[in-house]
Length: 294
Picture 1 (spheres, helix red, strand yellow):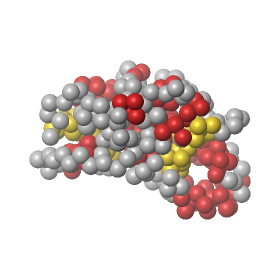
Picture 2: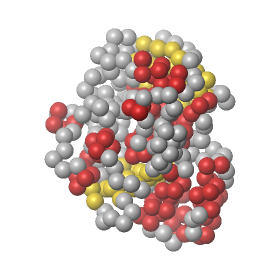
Picture 3: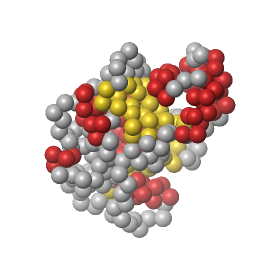
């Protein structure tokens, strides 16, 4: 079992502990439960969907990386598939605060990178900030996304973000988590570059068309690829590096063990991810970074 899960697991009700322990005992637990696993855990624990999501929040929060704030937030995203995806806030020493990741962004992106095609709900242990509300407004679930908070009645994103501004206001029809393939090609046989290219081909950048992806390799040789997620309000856009760090962290790898990285993006984009990617990776100890253009 990954060390980060031991203490919060021990605090859960006995029936839930017993149901989850076989899943968490694997060091490669992916910080998600498949729909089949969810049904098994519900049966063994006696919890319903909402109760289970709330009960899992301490496990999600255990994935937080908070060297600056020391304030841990957990989130659980429920996919249309029935899968549950963990999310947690992530901070990086030496990098500007703008490079941090909020728990809701983490859970949404985690689900997207695992192949989920849409979300039904987000359960979180603290009220989503305005940044996250705007980020979630880019999703193909729209303002109908259900938001669950401890001690509060169920509500929708529309309740938390009235009179919202989003992709529909800019006549954007392809939304975050829709299936896309932009069809870019890269004359580069490096597996890391090809992973970054695949991520770029699935990225969401309808406002700038500056599709991009980042692939990271850790010291064990595992590869984690993330995609750019652009937003109608621009500032809540999630860079591809952050997406790849989300997958790396949720998969149980240490974000401080990035050995090398590749950014794949257009040769002459309207905006480039290069400077921010290079600077943030340098802050966490990786200097072997290159840019592959298509």
